Image (cartoon, rainbow, N blue to C red; front, side, top):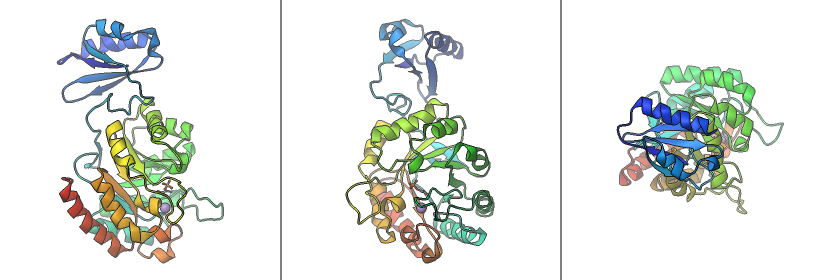
Length: 337
Ligand code: PEP
Ligand code: MN
């Protein structure tokens, strides 16, 4: 159930409604918009019906949300959620480009990439310090050493950092160094991990699972929201299909579908979706035309030497070209880049 409160309601009146919600054994999630205060009731709301909530002082309307995800839904919050990271707004009108190497491979490699992507127009630096690899024999990242290089790059180039956590134990360290915590595709349904990042207030970049339906993706976001963290960015990164020419299949339709179902920002990762650098530009342009709020793209100064995902990493010149073209498409759809 979602309660829409009367216009101009006082804090004391809200508090008294909150007490009634708690008395009914439910958890209130308050969302204060420009015009209205809305309270989402989470838990078994069968005990008190709609008529009861309509009778409560200060409640203008009570709406039953039939979708399985509640806090992530547009019914709960009609305005877009905008997440601000060091002054950069994700989910606002401007398209935000996050870029960097797949993995932090060393100090020089990271600083060099950070300088390149910054100069060409990236707003946020990506780079994995803890890498989820399919084979146990592959490079698994530099761990804490990698986090330190990310911090150095941030300080040197003024780029906030997004990096992945793979386990609950890594959250504390990663939170100290990163501005945005990434939950990778393989962990989208690691519910204990979702609960723990939900207890932080860090922005969370949640990637769609390899075979996750849109509803499952939104329920994963719901875990984070329900645990108290409203700062979730959704990332479409391709799903498994019968097609093998590309690494995955980018579900471009997920972008407008998600934008209509949820108020959360939606970005696209064309790199992991396609796996081949020469197709990254057109698909990125399509993503912005389809309504994505941003991109997260892999770039490497020397992709042939990359320790992971070299084939999909853009050459610096290609990244420059991407930004140039994005500005045109962004301009055409009223989204400055
Ligand atoms: C990544 O972004 O580094 C990554 C491993 O992506 P995904 O979880 O989408 O495979
Ligand atoms: Mn990668």
